[in-house]
Length: 485
Image 1 (cartoon, rainbow, N blue to C red):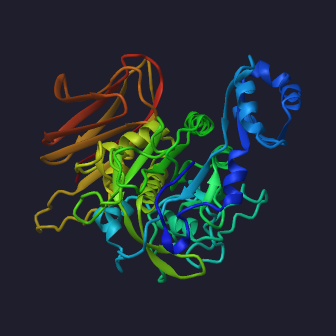
Image 2: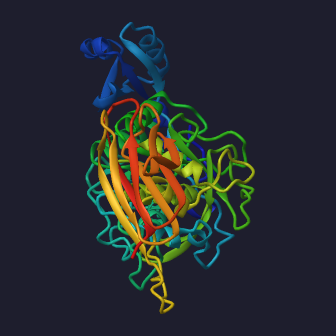
């Protein structure tokens, strides 16, 4: 059973007996492709009724129609040659802690250098973040116009409205409408939000609905999936769904849990899922936060609340939403980025701190790592009256493969030349970028994804030479800044 922190104000400390009984009488069965053909007969013989399917994962959700039949059915299913696994359907809870430590200002974006990242990008409407939670309040004025169609797996309908508040709070951190004169600023101003309701009004849900929600969001265009929920129990179906998302280009972010433990909750503990702990203003983990995650993020955020207002939202749920928003910003800057590249950028840009593997996230460093060709507008140089040099910037793009690419640069004055090369995918072997003047090599760098070259130059003609030793074609973008006229 999932148990992720006791939220007294929302009544999330436990489940009612009816819900608990319903969850443990349901069974999740993962079949082999051959086993699916005989699944109906097997289920009928065991007295099982199918109540749901996740066809992309070859999983069925079953109930036992006789008292005490679930355990016996599990044993029989596990012995079947066409069954990969069979397990009881579990329960998930929203991650929330008592709201007795609320801060009135948005220190979180400042701490993570989001304003500097916003100089590079404020997001893209093409990037969708799925919020797998209690739903989202569509009437919240800071979320209007931000929502794409979603689904309610709790009630089985296309209306994923929030009846708890947890999901609306998470959504506001990720992508509240920003720079609009009201409310709060979300991390990804222009990104859109996909509400997928997998938790009910008490903040509880089942592992089957969570798995269905992950698959549905993946199949309907999400680039990032935020799961501010969890369980102390591993679940094969959720693990399979998370792997499905990753294989289809979707980054899954999960909260570590609020039980002051060094053991991560699930799905945060799953491979391929970005786990997030909650940090404070001093880059220390909150006492309630589970440790051992890959990353930490500010755990106290001002955000949207259910019913139209605003609140301070504290917990690893809140921290996970920060990471999802930053990941969406990074994908907006580099739409071709794969999940592993986004995760690498989050980790590479993190600020080291105790309690987590890579550190506390930094929005600017993440965006810059994914799209180093983006640069904040620089102030125009002030002329000294003697024709002081200005900076010329040129951008080249295309493919490099069997043949080398060469770009002519005419430098008009002494100074510094800076070149940034970004590949759209990781090269099989290091790509080489060399700055030459006549037959002399001035500077040289190599790498598989992103390269930066810096060299002191003087007036004259130079060439930037790009080669790919593997010969496999790869698209690139080369940005060069150098002393101009």
